[in-house]
Length: 289
Length: 278
Image 1: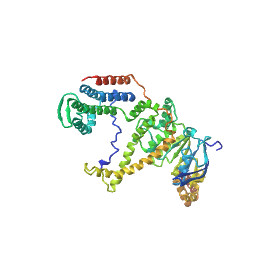
Image 2: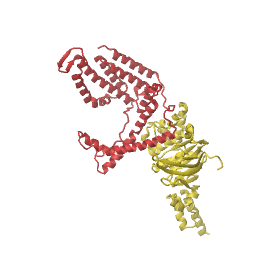
Image 3: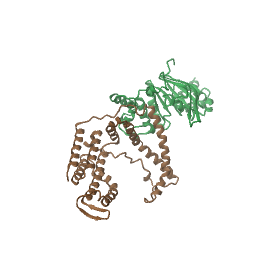
Image 4: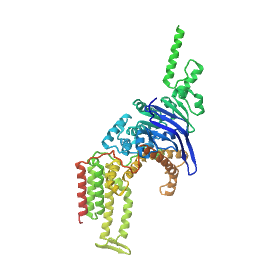
């Protein structure tokens, strides 16, 4: 990708302050770029700093050292915080803890109220956002009657209404059941197709496999970076980092050990099916001729 | 055993009873204003006839809102002991203050006169009227509308730097989290009960014991509340919330003729209540 990065993280170090003397260092000189329109996944085990780096992307945390630039604006610039946060929206882990209002549509409007959007325009934007996540029918419901997946869709709608360029998901699917997770992933896939930049911080390797690019965090540093295929090919290295590989990848590796013709570099379920088909046809042809 | 843990199944926040009557359809800002005017009139009105009239107004409102009167009565019921105690105390010790009229009985500090009897009866009536009125209001207005109405009516206070919006937001968030915490509490009670704790089985008069029974629930509940609050702050900040900053409002109400009429009617009725000389 040759275009300008949307978010540039330059040599960022960060530590949480426990008390006056004690700091817990979390990030050590992390640099990364998020390009417009890409789907980036950040993985890493607990405490690797992946959530902390994601909170730097829209200025919720500001680096102790280094800089974060969002579309050319430094996140230290408190005066332009609204600009930064309307460009980079964030959905958090817990579905219940990010809904503010007692009615769905008002919650979606919350961010718009904060940045002072006029009421007429607000109405249109809320309609658009609810439509985009498929929750228009629920607009007058109180949020506590919704399922986890529906609540997360509302949270995404709240971000979309701000018309961001980038959506950061901080383990947004980790509290959901499988159905809810699929709902969210479907919404995210569609948004990405329509041009939204996605940064997905996740525990689920299958989600990472669906990204354009994967960054693996370890001990506050970037341990690996590359396309999902390159990253998940490094089984040994990932095991050292206490990370799993996608199911498809593991199955492919197993089969490869028994049947050397079977490609080990597969990361999606569909690819495994295709590979099995390919080999079956090949065998049939071989025995036929 | 099962029923006592079912906290979330029947949860209703506020007690909104949608009947779609004209009272329900009133603009909450105007409804709240009319309500405040009537409450003030009731507080001022100290006559038998005035209070009888106020009581009639309340009954008429129930009828108009198509809400069965038993909803109002169920609000009065828990207040009855309080009203009685208040009546007795007023009867015994208010004779000195509420002087005038004929004296029926005088014994030591206890003076019972026609004036003090009037005071007792009028206070009891006021009580019932206020409960009736607030019942009509809360039964015909959703909590969301109430918050909006309140926020709008308090807006003049912004000139003296009262944080009206923050205040409304606090109430909204409180209402929003009631079911969440009810669910949390249900989970904790089940977890504790499965390890042998027992809730609500002590006799009702052993208040200390029953209170102590709740500690294993209350402390973790506080803990959870704090961590949820931290998450919520983060989520609000991520969506550009700045305390005290100027914002626009999504909820939009347009006043109709009936809304102005409602306030006018309440003013007239209040004038009658206050103006009646007997």
